[in-house]
Length: 347
Image 1 (cartoon, one colour):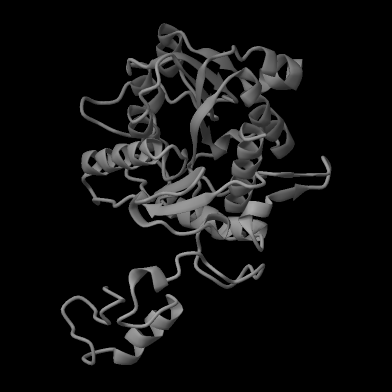
Image 2: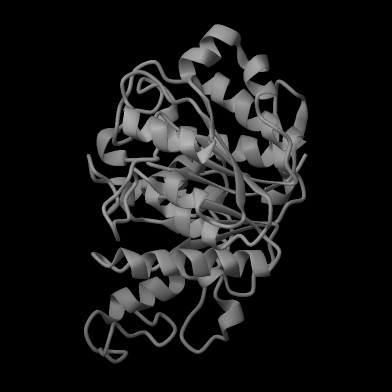
């Protein structure tokens, strides 16, 4: 729909839905004939969580990441054709944005106040929400190419990319866009995601195996795998790739300080976070449950320690499935983890 010309597809202004067209124009902050600059992009609903356009923490909406004037750029990938189990991760970006409304501020440049630390995080940072990558249903290769293109566009404008999914298959096309040499991949998950897929198959069981084949990925650390959710095939593949595996059980036995010490330093780090690394009681809105996962405070401490290991060049949060969580707490938890990790990166 072209809201500036007041038409829907090929319906001229004054034809079908004229009242609806005018209402949309008003909601967009302008009327027909106004220059594009008069069309407000920044949602304006104060601290009201139930009103306003749903961007991440009510950040300015910048379609297709064009002309970014931002330090941090959010990109959604509503894709779940790579999942083997419960579908619904395609609604993950929408749910994370919805959950982020509880952290809206009057002005994002003021940052977010941490009571425990008695300081503001992310103060002065410029935000943009680029919306969602265009999805080609049943054509995953085309969608993946657009993911790579979208991340490259963000990086070319010197913004920090945060990608919200979507199933875990999207991590590979994201990493393809990052040309930084000597990259260390830190992978939080209940599963190793190193299974051997059928030739040409792109799914969420093998993004780490595919990522290891990229020339810029030199180290992989895998954290939080547990229970009976993996098998010998995935384990042998991970071992042959030389990944460092830290199970959830080992974290409980040896503690968070020991776990953090196992993560080596690197000049460039990418983080991929599958929310099923947390216990299902914390994040029930995901596709593959496995008891014994990390608590929020455990994962939060691990994530916020990573910037001490080197420069983080981007991260993604994947596998949020709101169809399994009508409470919405999984999306909100994902939003909070995003803010906390960003706060540590830009500290």
